[in-house]
Length: 306
Image 1 (cartoon, rainbow, N blue to C red):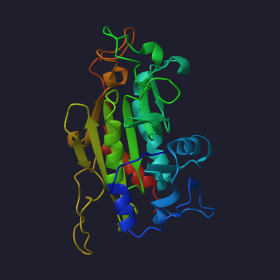
Image 2 (image 1 turned 120 degrees about the horizontal axis):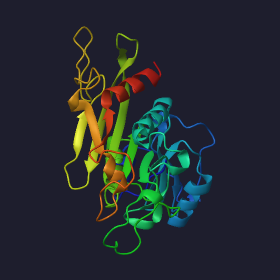
Image 3 (image 1 turned 180 degrees about the vertical axis):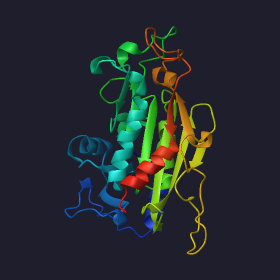
Image 4 (image 1 turned 30 degrees about the vertical axis):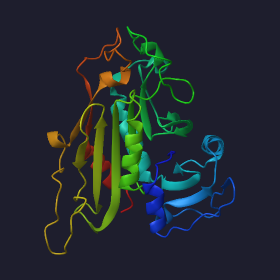
């Protein structure tokens, strides 16, 4: 889980929150010796760090389970893994794996992975990685009828670039999540970006003994407006008053059309100018990856600390 520079706003906001400044020693990177608590995030761990050193850090030395943010030489930890976060990653991977069917692992047309480094769309030397990326297995990528100018973009290993990206935020702020998702959209080969945010659990429990929790999602699509959902067991901005009815988002059962996200399977095989499915695949050209946000909500509520 890693992140990249967002000009201006993030660092300014961080400093206004009173976070401790890191010593301005040239190129210094220091990971805390004591366990990191969620309440301490965002946490600065480096200053005056070069892009090359940052890339080497996240590639070889950075402890896993954290999201790192690089901005103008400063390095921060902005999020950390949790049980519900890791469960939702696996949960969503299962959604995207449906159309691989019974294909042997080595020949699966749709590659689904996590924490895979890609060049940043705004600065080639920097690397970023999503929670989940969906890309085509190279033998299945249709050859374009008109050659793409230059080499098609790839991940940091020179393999197929992600076409669909999923970012999941736990401690990471909504603004930071949005900035990361918008950054991915600056790469034309990324057709869809899904961002999901788990907000802090409320102090009141539902009838099943689970803390009420707000959850929000956004879907960015190339050439279309961003779609938004408020799908938790309680709305993001709701006030919960003891003795009064608990507000609801309306996402209270499966298969509600307003809370179902559809992403075309064909997007995985986007390879300008072709957006069609490869020949020989037994997949309906109109097929979608279908994500029911009620299922996501329930998985989070069941796996969080109650």
